[in-house]
Amino acid sequence: MKKTKQLSSTELSQFIIEGMHEKKANEVVLMDLRKINNAVTDFFVLCSGNSDTQIDAIAKSVEGLVYQKTGQDPWNREGKTQREWILLDYVDVVVHVFKSDKRGFYDIESLWGDADITYFGDDMKPTKELVN
Image (cartoon, rainbow, N blue to C red; front, side):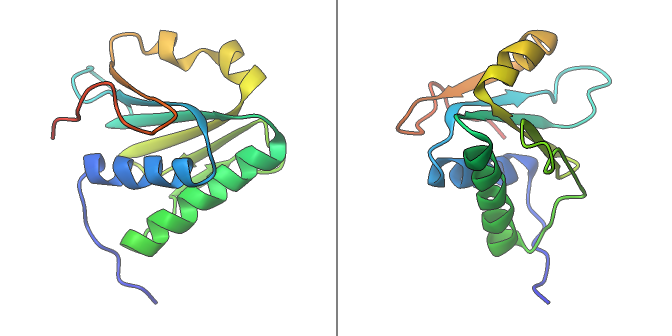
């Protein structure tokens, strides 16, 4: 069994984003919730996929890369059966992998509008740098 490596939620978020990039996720967003009172986690990492097959592949890529780098599995997984919105809960970081049409419907970015939001382009470079 691989030993779990303890790392910051910022570092974990970067591995998650890397896993998303491996499967060509669209509209990757990192939402920093650390300054919001009563936030349930440090970060949300969101992305979209064009099909149920792609969002399943993105979620598997994230899980695989995070496990390879840290030995951590998600504390909880939801949505694998329906494959329209897959949630991976790493406690300090919650991953949302949406089918493109569902993401707009739930509009998490607006619900957590006070969050510090970093957008990632197709090259996966942030529009601004993360701060620990």
